[in-house]
Length: 428
Image (cartoon, rainbow, N blue to C red; front, side):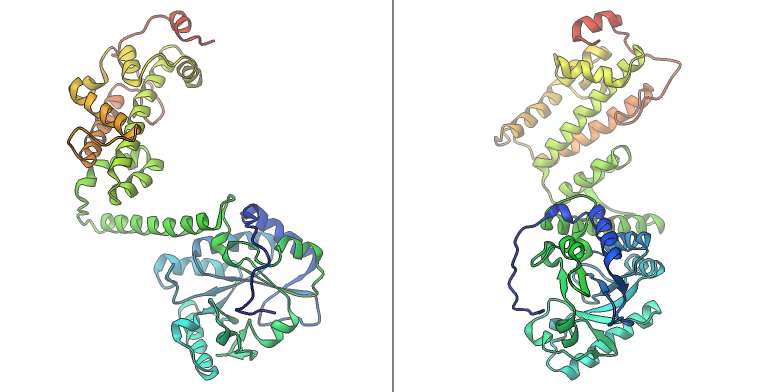
């Protein structure tokens, strides 16, 4: 029996279940034992399955599941919450996602927040559900088929009529009485594991509820899944803002963080974290991260150059570095290119040494004793990274992150022969 007072019988997270691959497998099992149905045409005399989604956290994840269902040849019902704190169904990008779900042949329903509306009677419920049903009709041009409660309390679940506001009530007395129920509420199987329920097929009919935000490409804990959904959306909104400024040729004043913008072009996979740390003003952690990227940048220039000069793979060169790490990165750079890294960066050896000292203090967990803010260090390191990237491109050895670009001229110091390199580093 569905009730707001039900206590979980199971507390195992079963994180490995909540992947796209496992989701696809569940649909295949379900197809063997049940007829997929929708709420507007329930075949009460057959072994039917109502497969529904309450859209609590992520429309992007909903679209991912809708595509999997479409590929499996089944249809589901997606219940939209017009008062969600996690998405806005009438925002253009989110609106288009819902239209894409419809285009895949799925149905829409209302995920009704009774607490938001402060529902006090069945008459109120009937009127308010009808109003939200109209929102779907007017905005998406389709007929909603049913409604479900969002975070229902006992008073909501006591509303047990078959229909309210012209929509089928997923929590009607008949559904509670005749249709067993399985849900992934809170990101785990609180009562029965869906795989077992579908495989046993001991229930003549079944109502399955999933929340798409719980289902990801790889296994992770429930809170990690929510974090991924929420911060993915936040990042998408920031990108939308920046793209809008570019599209309308507006000046995007971003202050001191302009120092890190070039990183988005040469290391986009790193930029999201860098941008986040900058705007959270975690400059101590950001400085440490930027210094690591900077050293990797210098090291890759060395690898690209040696790989080209000796006509060996970059993997062989990396093996040499890892097998016998005789040098620090600045020492390696100077040995290979015959110029100090600080010289290429147009920075004095003393000032570059201060950056290394600040990094070492951060690694050791000690307070910064150099009397300057880490924000200033971050700006300096970002500037040096940009200079090194430009220098690498001028030498035709890539950006420090990218692939080596061939050149007919190589105005760089030529190292001793490969045999001597082999002897020094033990490469075979």
